[in-house]
Length: 255
Picture 1 (tube, rainbow, N blue to C red):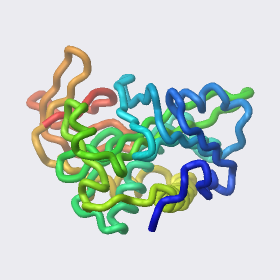
Picture 2: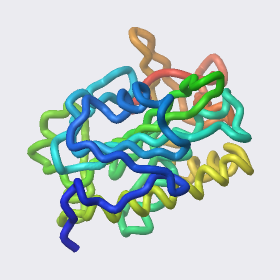
Picture 3: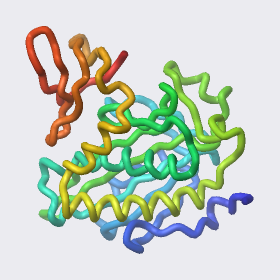
Picture 4: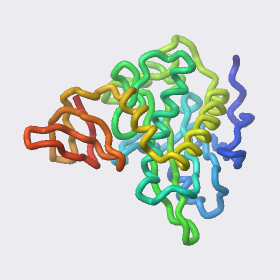
């Protein structure tokens, strides 16, 4: 199906909240933080291009025009504690990965703490931040998903990266894909509110590409090696080292 012009996309935010479409932004995450006091819960901010897209540790996220999905959504923390709220970043990764499997994408996995991978190449990433809004707290979750970007365009990135079009050999309709993602995330958030993180950790372990493998956690100049055992209920990584099991909250997972 031919994709509709971006400015005509028929997309709503989560739970029928507004969706804001911008042809170009510095980043959807930055725009969410600037305008959060004016936005309804569930609001979706979508960019057709990001000039300064960022991932974890403020790394650049290559965001070419009219190619991929770049969006942030705003969630209330009703029934979710401040300590648990950032874990919805991992729930988002699992929920989108499961949806892509339903679309027939083979080999979809997740990588701690926030990535969607296929065949040891990065397909997407998620960031999350708790924001203070008028004496309450909201959660902003940002998603970058490589959809129709070419292999040549991805050569600008210094790590293994792929896209849905590379994997499938065809261009995807981003509007339809985003509509499906919004419905998926609505269900995921309701489940997270009711049941917490535990059921999602069980799903994560089934999809964790590196579970049981020797890995390295890098945080600045610090490096820690061990066997990946899984994720704890606080979102930390359990790593078996010669000194015993260590729980890691921050860092990049490498193999």
